[in-house]
Length: 288
Ligand SMILES: O=C(O)CCC(=O)C(=O)O
Image (cartoon, rainbow, N blue to C red):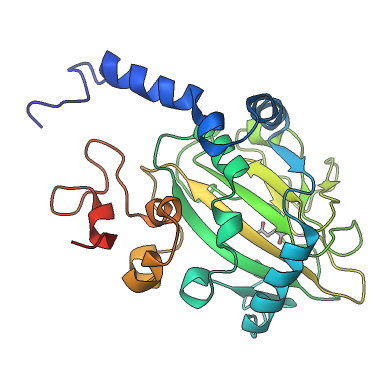
């Protein structure tokens, strides 16, 4: 491509563009209205362990309101061992309800993702997940393991599991293997012989982890369901898991915040990824 405004001949980003990106990163916490020291502390833990549990990020009452709206939409049991035969999920959530949107673009999560990924990172998938009584432990997995790029490597994705109900070690709290984000080709099997940390946390809290970290939903040994939501993100140059250009209509996207619109795909990684007719696709949602 001739006359590239952003990339030098050796493939590196031009200095003024780099300076702009670095300034934007430095101002990220302030832009999202969150405490920079908190972001730095959480990121230190994420880089060390592959995850962090952030307690009481959303009021319990707000989670209860989300539950009232979203739970009736989960009507089908899972179809595979991975989905869980005693687990209910919904996909294409934004087409059905906007109730999870405040979790999708939560300012603290946006500030963390700014530290990990290139500008205009994307929403990769959004689900509500209800783990029913008697469900067995989900197979352990790393969320960005389907990108065929050898490990160890930086994460291509990151995710939150939001506790809508309280998460306990008995009711299926997500389990995660500390430092597994640093692994190469190792596979933990069923987890035997590994440290499996249950993300025990009250309603309104969130487990934030890298796409390279091995984890899975725990077994639900109680007589009550464990309700959660997951918001998953990826680099803006990677393909999203959910095909939002087909799953979410433009009318629904127009009802979302500009940040969510961009994360659905109405954005570009400048200069050449994601354009429509040679221009930023956010224009498709703006009234002419
Ligand atoms: O529900 C959970 O605790 C984890 C779910 C999960 O990791 C997944 O389905 O990818």
